[in-house]
Length: 134
Length: 134
DNA sequence: TTGCAGATGTTATAGCATTACACAACAATG
DNA sequence: CATTGTTGTGTAATGCTATAACATCTGCAA
Ligand SMILES: [Zn+2]
Ligand SMILES: [Zn+2]
Ligand SMILES: [Zn+2]
Ligand SMILES: [Zn+2]
Image (cartoon, protein in one colour):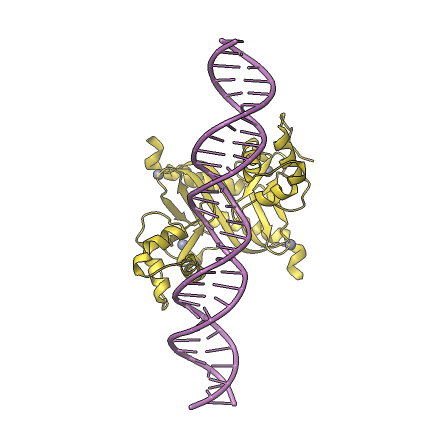
């Protein structure tokens, strides 16, 4: 399922993570809600609260440019300073990767500018190899 | 005002760009709308349509992680493959910068993966030098 | 027992963005 | 001139994303 240990998730957190882990692509909070109505979910806040916790734990990432969420699929994700995502605009697939060279340069800029860096968002939009020809 | 030439903008485009260029920080589409009600703006679409065009022209950038927009302030912005933004979570200030090393590495990854790269989003969140101490 | 922290349930509301349709201005074509 | 196509505009309605506010419940520690 995941490259991470799951430190005692609650029921709601487990359900939300399961929805994401079982999906091939990213899901919006509202589509997660719809998938979990059968399990008793009724309001967006149930999803958002679980997502907040899962993101804090590093099990889930938020894709800022499409307002959606994915289960982490990068082994040793948190050992890297920043993570990048490549999102296919045609099929919706997401590739997660780390490039320490990119991280070093961005952290170098921050240090030089006195910017206290908290979180880095790197998202590539385009067409994946499979969709490129089509 | 700007580092760019302004190729015959329409009235609405001029007003929206003026609002952004005259603001110290980024603005949301709805706060732009509020600022332009006195000039006859009535609906969000008037703002979004102007923004679409201004972004296409490279005069304005969208900040994905805060759903807001800024006037471009980077000289020769479009000569770089990708642009990064550092956003202060306390005062809202935004620094725009280009790092060709970062661009090279991300483009390198895309080429190696066969990913047809269309747009790159790089956003740093944290505290600017001035807010870091406070 | 009491108190606290974290998680949950529910309703309402706020904030962001697009769809759909009608109309106006203008240039290019024939 | 009449036609056609393109781009911008105005307006209303709708849809999608996210949070505020308040009540309740659970488990655990003092
Ligand atoms: Zn990850
Ligand atoms: Zn694809
Ligand atoms: Zn720029
Ligand atoms: Zn600041």
